[in-house]
Amino acid sequence: METTHQQIDEVGEFYLAGESEYVARTLDTVRYAFQPIVDFDTGVVYGHEALIRNVDQLGFSCPADLLTHAARHNYLADLEPQLLMMALEYHRKFQKACGSKLFFNVDGRGLGLANDPRMDLTAIVRANGHDPSQICLELSENHQDNQSGLSDHILKNLRRDGFMLALDHFGQGFSELRLIHDLGPQYIKIDHFFLKDIDKDPRQKLFVTTVANLAHVLGARVIAGGVETEGEFKACRDAGCDLVQGYYVARPFTDKSQARLFYDHIRTDLAQNKKTEEERKIKEGIQTLPSVSSSASISELVDLFIADQNLSLLPVLDTNSEPRGLIHERDLKAYLYAAGFADEGHKLALDLPLHNFIRSCPIADINSDIDTLLVTFASSLSSDGIIITEDFRYAGFLSATSLLKILQDKRLEEAQDQNPLTGLPGNGAIRRYIDKAAHARSTARHFCYFDFDNFKPFNDTYGYPQGDRVITLFSELMQRHICGIGTFCGHIGGDDFFAGFMMGEQDEIAERLLTLKRAFKSDVESFYAPEHRKQGYIQASDRYGAARTFALLDCSISMITVEPETGLPVDRINTEIASLKRAAKRSDDGFVVKTLAA
Image (cartoon, rainbow, N blue to C red; front, side, top):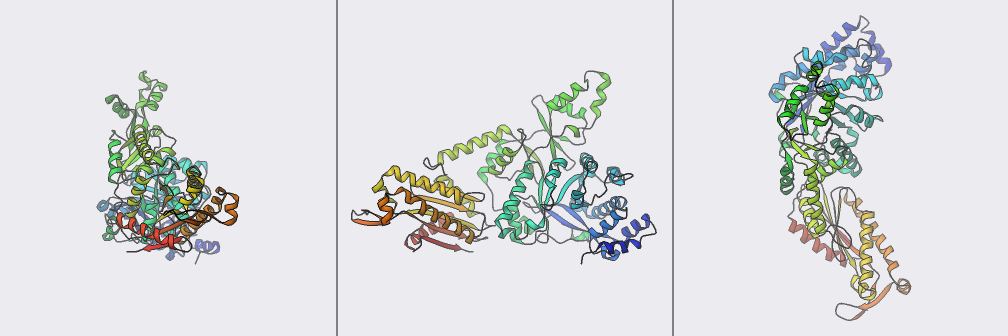
């Protein structure tokens, strides 16, 4: 049951003795549990979210009510830093064993008002022997609803001091895109509303995929929080999320003996999507540029550029070897000239920290496919390239030159395989798609084959130029009705087409295919002479030379659905498609569906 404002005020009467007693009673009562946040690819624990427990013993139904009470009675600014210290001390007990970040929820209401101890959070953390780079502050919806220029300025300073920032419950508020722009959080945690049953809703998966692409372009990581089922886990992974948290991974725990380095059921689920040829091309282009620590001085930075005259930029890493961004030599030169580098009196400028020079840069995992890298690069305002990570740590830099070479090779390969009439991918691309989809067991895959009915007699009657126009019409209708995100459309040759779907339910896809079939049957009538349209058929010779009547053009469609966790050899899929094609030709409505399960 949700605590009302009246109940919160009644609880507040218990603390009339004063702020310090209230804070002390709270700290004596509450405890912390920790829920792992895990790398999707390896199952390795990346961090733990600190979750307040025992608030019911203070009369509250949930932690949010405790913090609301504290904010309304002006105790929040004093309480939050001490809660963070408590969480850090609990976390320290098992952090040495598994080396992970602490994700701590920050309410943030009233941040930056007079005498707010949270303004000195960096000093408080360091004085207690903790490293800010090991802490990620999760900004709750309360900060989003009550943000001000002052609070954002303080958060930017905390980020500069090494704290990580995460935007919690993304998708719930109205100001989140502005927060991403203004604060540059390193993590975006998607609201559970968009993740629940994501494996059953293509629109949810599309939303999450779009958010993940945006985050990666801006150099942020995406956390899928509250994942409860294997289906949700796999759909979030396929959508591009980087980290996962929820009951499917592990429940919150309080006993340090439950802390683990990795989770086998996540780790062993990975080894399916190895893209050996793509990996080879990507790894060939990666440069291992020297890096600089985010705590280094400008003097150290100058020494690095002087030592290597070919360097034009340097990746900046935190104490965990995770990238913070790039520093450009041109920015450093402009600063030094403006500071009067040649004058002795201005050489103090060399001792300043370098955080003001760090530029954001897109970040991608070394296991990302070529399409993901190219989309990330093309969407970025920066033309420098992409920082490549492995297990979230710096692994190298993929320059714009290397990316353009990869893009050129990809376009050349596509052009060589493209159907000259329709411009759609040809047989080589179709084979590669089927091979890739056959091994993507985490989701249902749908393979569709299209074949015109009565196309030969049409060509014999109206000629091949008119036949080419019919083929072009079908290609355009395909792209209008079924092509899009999660769909592959190809042209096998002549009147044979192919489509593959990696998103969507069988019934929904079948309806789209039938819509395409109806549109083609209707539009293609315009290619016939009026008398043929009126009578509904043409007369022509069959393949044996005998005169026959043939109905107007239509399209037969065969569709094979391969259920999740079903692995099939490519040859088996091709055999099933060929068999189903014949069945579609014989069927009354020209549409046949078959499901293959493990």
